[in-house]
Structure formats: C-alpha cells, structure tokens
Image (cartoon, rainbow, N blue to C red):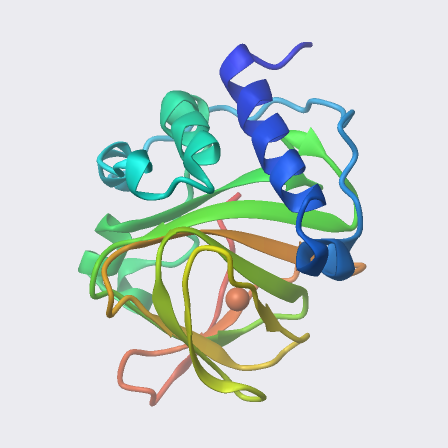
Length: 210
Ligand SMILES: [Fe+2]
C-alpha cells in the first residue's frame, strides 16, 4: 500500500530536515528516504484545531514541514498518552502528538522513533522520564526545558534538547505554544514514561494508548 501524497510530503520534509542537521545526525544517524509504509488509522483530537492555526510564515526555516503537517492533519493518528487524572483537562485539550517514523509506523524504522507534538500556550508538561533517549527539536514556537543534567534552557526553532535514558525532565510553554519533533532512540522504544502528578506528590506509570 502506498502512502498518500500528503503523508509522503510530510515524511520527505522531516527526513530532509533531520538529515541536514549535524546535531540530529549525531543523535540518531541518517534516516532513510525509503521507509516501508505501515498505515495508521487517523485519530481525532482537539489539538488539531490549534495545529491548523499555526502561521507557518512566522517560521521560515521550517515552513515546509509546518505546511505539510497542516495539510496531513486529518490523516494523522493523534494521541494524548496521558489521562485527565494525570495531567489535567486543559492539558489534554491543548496537547497531542503523532508517530511519523518508527516501530509503529506510519513509516517503519526499528530503533528510531520520530514523533511530532504540540503543546498549547502556558501548559506545564510535568516532570517525567522514560527509558528511550530523547531529542526535542522545536519546529515552531519555543519553550522552557529543564532536565536533571542540564538545568533550565529555553529552546527555539533551530535548537536541540537531549534527554538521556531515564533522565528526569519537564517543559513549560511560557513563551507561547510549542510544536516540536521528539526523537526517541534505543533498543526498546515501547517502554512508557513515568510522570509525576501536578502537585509532585504521586508518580504514575503510564500505559500508552496506541
Ligand atoms: Fe520525554
């Protein structure tokens, strides 16, 4: 089965972007242009409305990726991973992510997983950690990142933020929304995150809804 034109354009723009950035190449190596297509059924989430509102002309270096995401928006399997109980109802309504490349498709790769996520203005992505090593690469907007090893860093389009395996980290959308690549690497990319509750008193082991 062949992917739609919109999905292929999105894949091509992301692969080209990743292969053109030294820091991404150092993190996960070169991504093949010929990945097998494993279709995912589209899934609707409220965050799609916010994604549609991104003004891609404000982000010239990533404009073609942003336009491709908006065009493919309703063909993508948007997820929210967490429950309202874990992160709150506002977070669930204004956040979402989808797999583009990786073990779950839609473009198959075994040991690298490239997701794209959106977090609305003023959201606080509570402290969490996971087995996979992770690189965040903002494609639009910016955010304040914190991790155990590096402390606080503001990341904008063009920056890369790396979290080591099981390193605790959080993100605050203090400067407006964030749309970013989240790249995972490792031998088991299916181990789910652990996240602390909003008051920091509890930990939740997440069962990711695939
Ligand atoms: Fe993470």
